[in-house]
Amino acid sequence: MFDSTSNEPLSIRQQELPCGATRRHGPTQYVLLLIKTGKGDHRINDCRLAYQAGDIFLLFPEDRYSLEAQQHTQWLQLAFTPVYLAGLMHLCGQQWLNLSSRQSPQSCPITANPASQRHIMALADILLAEMLSSPDTGPNPVINLLMTTVLSLLDRLLTQPAPVAAPQSSSLLIRRMIGYVSQHITEPDNLRIEKMADVFNYSPGHLGAIFKKHAGESIQQYIIRHKLRLVETRLTLSSMTVSQIADEFGFSDVCHLNKLFKRYYNNTPTNYRRGLLTDLPGSF
Image 1 (spheres, rainbow, N blue to C red):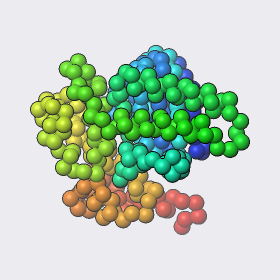
Image 2 (cartoon, one colour):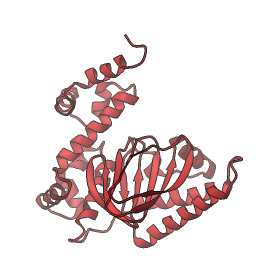
Image 3 (tube, one colour):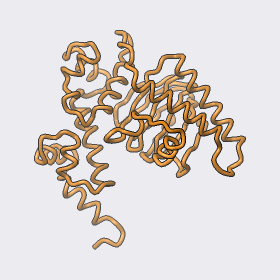
Image 4 (cartoon, rainbow, N blue to C red):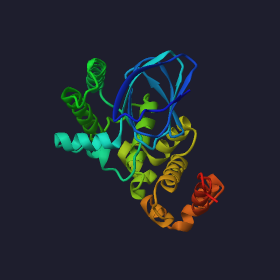
């Protein structure tokens, strides 16, 4: 089952997924997922982790995401466009740096404390009720105020360092690592295993072993694949040159990017983009 967000500037829906079913999300908008009941597996950009009631996930427009329910799952899906985000910041005079000022959209699983999770869930429930009861006759100041509060809480949570993962919380540790990688994907020095080991208070070897055990690949393999997915998006949706893309994501040079891209996509970035152009309607 594919779940595509609408073109509405802001939407919020309560959704359900039966046990054994799968829901996929395409990259179009910002999406806040608030898991209310159930449990299962979620895949963010091909990395599989468990989810449970109370979890909150923020997806950025380029993210790929799926839910696979092990128990009947109910969640709230709050979706908003980059244009809506920019307009709300202008309206309220705030700027949520973690949402709007990254060099590229990233996925960020949110490791909030229980109190913050309850606050965001409660606000989302109020927002849903307000949108259902409000006639569609123009801007609603109550909805804008609620969204301002939700986004302010999210931005604050994203700036706060998560508590050090307990030994039994390997799943939480992997989520934090994925969020860290996404946040620093254009900063090669911050993605070195030694730097990450310092951030998460583990030895490099231990941290790498935990990630590989639970994610099924090494942290460096995950970083490369994540970078290449963003490279693919740049080739598809932007007019950036291959050299500019290589610089953005910290590849040593275009040859390095070409080599890795060809290994995973069986094509060079230039030929990949050329193929996209020839597939357009009306191309010769």
